[in-house]
Amino acid sequence: MGNSYKYKSVSTDFAVFLNTFLIISTVIVFAVLIFISYQNINNEYIGNSMSNSASLCADAASDYLLLSENADDADVEMLMNIYIRSNILADNGAVYIVAPDSRILYSNNWALQEVDVTSTIKLAINEVASKPTETFQEYYETSATGGYIVTARKIDNNDLYAVVITETNASYFVNEYLSLIFYPVLVSMVAAIALFIGFIGLTIRPLRNISKTVSKVAEGDLTARVDEKYTHTGDSTGMLTLSSDLTDMARDVNAMIEVLENQENDRAIFISSVAHDIRTPLTSINGFVTAMMDGTIPPELYEKYLTKIKNEVDKIRSLVVSMTEASSLSHVDPELMDEFDLKEAVEELESELEPQLKAKNITFESRIDEEGGTKVYGEIQMLCRVLLNIVTNAIKFTPEGGKIILSSRMYKNKARIITVEDSGPGVEPEKRQRVFESFYKTDPSRKQEGFGLGLYICKQILVGHDQMIRLDESRELGGAMFIFTFPIPPERG
Image (cartoon, rainbow, N blue to C red; front, top):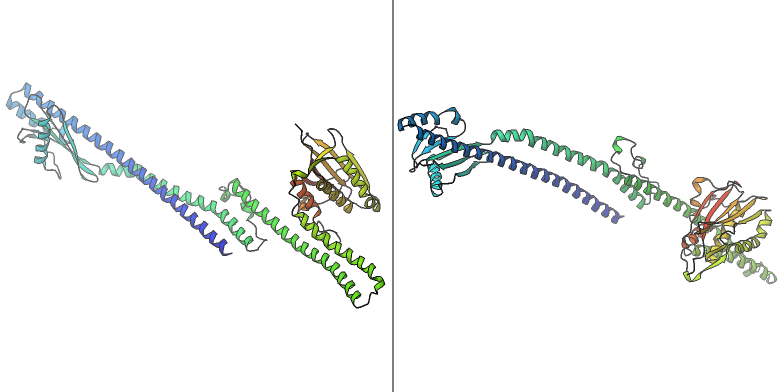
């Protein structure tokens, strides 16, 4: 019992670990996706800002060059101050026209925060001076949501430089990102986790019920059953998560428990039966021996009572032999397999059972179809034992003046089908499968002779020969009809 609980605990811990791992993995995946999407959009935003800054710098340089070429110095001074402070540049960034010594000649006075303008301009034109044909551009991050972009280029045919400093503030971008992407993704993630947990809970519920039922059975409670709502799919909205595998498992567990319960009941009946069948002859033996020892039975009657004692011993021996045989008949020695004639075996069986048939005035009819031959193959004594047990069983349940029919025909050149029908009361459909279980009796009362092993032995022998047996209702006689197969001889190459 302790081991079963330990196993159950380990299984539960593993299930909790697995569910936790899956949930954490889901959160991590969502977080990684959110981070990657944020980085991609942020990089795209910075890239667009750098592109705009480069375009603004190029426009400032070309516009100054255009003015300087078409106006005198005084006009250039006036026009440039007007242009550089115009609305065209007002909202795009700080624009400077600077001399080689970093002096600012023109500026749109764009307000900058956290930027050392002088040092930044000096660094930018030094970079451009080393590569006069290229545009210098660099992004400096000052916070998680912002920074500034420096763009500088030399004005053609002049020793002047155009420098643009553009601040980036991603606050509005972050807010938009949160409202359009992050929050919807977060809600989706929470909903997915909630649905996942709910789905897992609904899926585990039947498994817990099955586990609890199996634990009860392991503790000896054979009345336990898996809840019926877990043995059918689609019966209710809550059961939509049940797969056919789970319902099949639940049904199989219930069927297994029912078999165990039936076997336990049969075992109790069998023990009672065996105890009775052993106690009765032992009581007789003890009485006879005691009477012989104390002189109640005179010596001249010893032979008579010794014969009775031997008969009682034979009854006990018969019981022990039946029980021993039942556990070993499913194993057939290939060396003992041989072919024999079914028709001849049935004729010998009819001759052997003639006294029992006449005692009840039962008509026995044999219908052997000889098409394809009447030879069968197997361990001869075992297969003849099957015929004997089944026909004897039919005689037992057939009323006086009744009839038994044994039929046989070839089945697709693979086996011979044999049927034994009787005019007895038959067997209820719900009991037909159980008659082949060990120690089972359709009528557990003491009026029914035997130990409930005859048909079980037949099934074990046929299983050992890879054959089948089942019980049905006889349409012709109205009683029981046993249907089974014998193998046919293999083709000899």
